[in-house]
Length: 158
Ligand code: MG
Image (cartoon, rainbow, N blue to C red; front, top):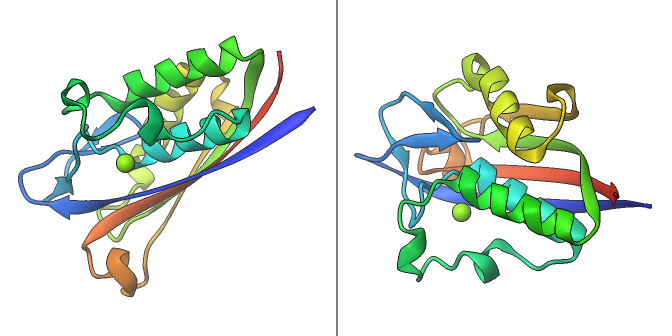
């Protein structure tokens, strides 16, 4: 039995914040605003995992009103969710994801992001695919107001 889950997230770009995607700190002019570290990609991955496992969504586990999650390392939240998925008798098969961002270019960081996410998911790097596209100058991404991310995961019975 194969289970699919989808995840989507977006965060606003802001001065004086770090840009962390898939646990990797990416140098740039601006970063992402949010209650946690605002790792929009990891948040999309978490929702995809919870979706595939039928376990709800990220807000139920790590509400942005909870002070415990202020500036939280989203990879730690992901690790927590992977444990919940395993407790449900499931294992992660693969992850595919897309970051929608005007700049900076994701290419130079893509391999490191794959490795970091693969490590937390307990996957071989080849089972984690990270894609990037831009907003082509249109919409909130294109205007440089924010970054979006989409993720799809597949789970199987362990
Ligand atoms: Mg988020």
